Image (cartoon, rainbow, N blue to C red; front, top):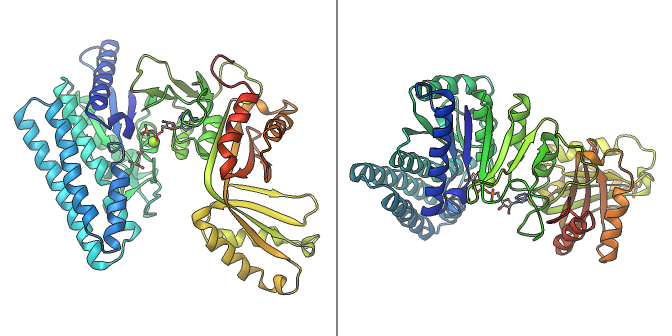
Length: 479
Ligand code: ADP
Ligand code: ASP
Ligand code: MG
């Protein structure tokens, strides 16, 4: 059985939805030929909202909370038209089209009602936002299922709220790994055994009480991995708009090329450090169940894409790919009074943890005079405030001289499992940056040694990526 996930870019227009449906139809045909006609098609589809829809929904809800009702009213009519146009172009059957039209209309009316109550309350809770932001997938999944039926594939849409059961961490919910597999098996296996291809909404889930949740932005990849692991799939395919996982983001580094194979460890590092092609949590369910992942291009389906496996076949020495996380802040706690005083680091990170801030990188000078670390810009003010409270006494006594912070910085991460034991990589990185006058503000090496991370200024980040990509000859034509 395979899980096929189509991202927002793969279902953004009539043509791309048509391509996605043809890819699924071909996979169903292939699985049926392999397993025999009487067997189930063995394909499960996961789909994101049409490209840009989630942003539109979130922006509209935020405007509603601020008292502006125009965006949600506009969004309702615009989204109705956008989905209906696709249905009109790809589905001939009038009854089918009318049914879909009613479904779109009902869901968007519900969206409008929600936004109206957000305006009345003047407040948008994370819980409310999860209901609104999941509407896009609740429109695209029924649409894709209907387009599949129009292509001769017996298909039905399933709301992931029925199968992905999560905790109540709204906006970034975690699947409950007892309830979810059981629900998936009960709801999805009988469908698949009777020859139906389920089209499940990506990104969303629900608590045990049925309250809608979301798995975090870009979370449809994670949905696919959760479902694949729950159903013990043979492969999880992530269909997107590039030829697999590439040596760098092709939007920034033009010469980036796609990689045939990567290990779970390498792709986890890449995703964690900002490579948007896979949601960072996607790897965990796949690793735990040893299910291979494949990243493929909806717009170039004959390209083999990237296979992500436990151990790569070829040994590759050195750097494989580079990536960057943006919108970060570097915070430094410094002072001579820190030398030899135990517990400063522990107190620093306790204070940070109380703010629930995510620390992306830590670097401490051997002189112990300072600790610096990086958090998302959005969490920066809260963290600095908490540290000033935690170290109020030390600051007053000048044991800690300053808690300084620098906004607009980026972590550039250099990735490759084969970097272990390959000397001189950091030196080459520094040389490449030095030649272009790019200042490295801080550096750290991950404990896995599959990653070296550097902090640079936002304004120099793209240039830094290109410089490192060039110096390791990761581009087209190089091996
Ligand atoms: P989807 O809508 O399919 O989920 P995303 O936009 O979330 O697609 O992810 C695909 C995009 O990720 C690509 O278009 C590319 O610009 C970006 N990207 C960033 N880093 C990488 C990388 N290392 N390899 C491939 N794509 C990357
Ligand atoms: N539609 C959601 C988002 O834009 C989930 C996804 O695309 O994976 O974040
Ligand atoms: Mg994505």
